[in-house]
Image (cartoon, rainbow, N blue to C red):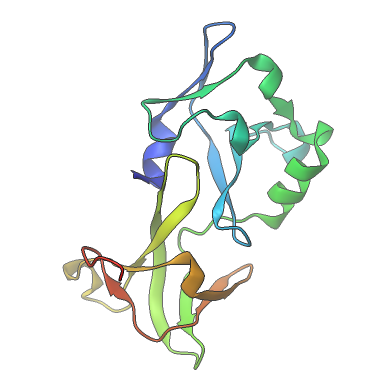
Length: 168
């Protein structure tokens, strides 16, 4: 299991050419499937000029590097309709408010844990309030999210789980 923020420090390497490409500039989440939707390797001034990598090109997210088969796995944002759609959705979960169905603020999404295939295992939630830094992050599982819009996610359950609680 890997924390999403740890992926930003990983090297992206083209294996066929033996080239270090760089570090991910952004990792976008597909909230409908709860998995990594797109890796932005080099962010351009406009979406169309960003260099992107489809998530299925990465062999394993649990390794030290994000190894892709070769340079041919990389795309310019404007040349890939799916990449453009994902970039326009702007699905960055970090900082997004999490509300209960009744409208109560449960906290903000501060991170996620990813399995070796790129699927999201859980989202980390920090409670609202002045003393939130004293409390441990809690988690919500992807199947407990009812909706996720541009600014807010809505939880199906009013209760969050302890970070070290095992799911039954």
